[in-house]
Image (cartoon, rainbow, N blue to C red; front, side):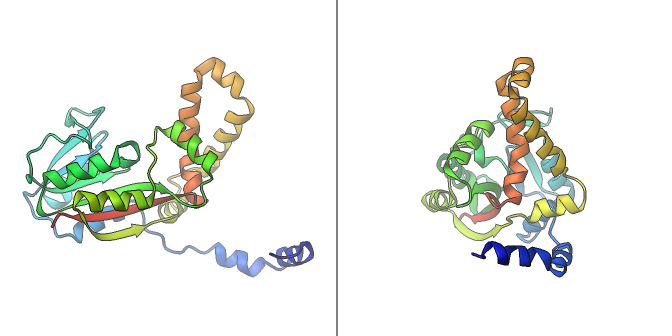
Length: 248
């Protein structure tokens, strides 16, 4: 750890470093998840289930790009093409599905039950592409507890996820710990306004009583959870991760 004198000396001569840090590292964007799926060589007509599909946009995009037959499932369907269903109870026969696509959903699920269901419905040789955001050692216990409450999260670590996959009989084909990469790209492309999220968090903290009286604590906390999610990724407290699990 530098002394105070050394620290101010470093700050006084950091211009070259700042110029270096200002250069892009060429981060991949959100569409790279489709590239991950493409590398698995899906075939037209294969059956893919989008688990936690929300409005079904990813299922439609996967069908358009790869010619796969898609079924979109969500506990709260937001589109007529989306069927009601949960990760813990998939409405499919054993060994009847070629691919599972699950994007940013397992954080709300019972992960051991969900992965057991993935293994049940996948055909031998089938695979699941799963994007999930997990806590890192930088996330302090009180931050983790608050985040679980704000974002309705279940409490699982990367080790827990690995164990659940093994117990379900799924074989890890790849794991890609994205860290800050997608958020960097979103900032570079101006598709995420971190400044707006930070301002929301500041105002929600400073005028909490006023906003709670007008909108209710649940609405304010949901807004805070959504705003802090990306900030924690940038700070390395949360790590977006892409798994590919294969059923032997």
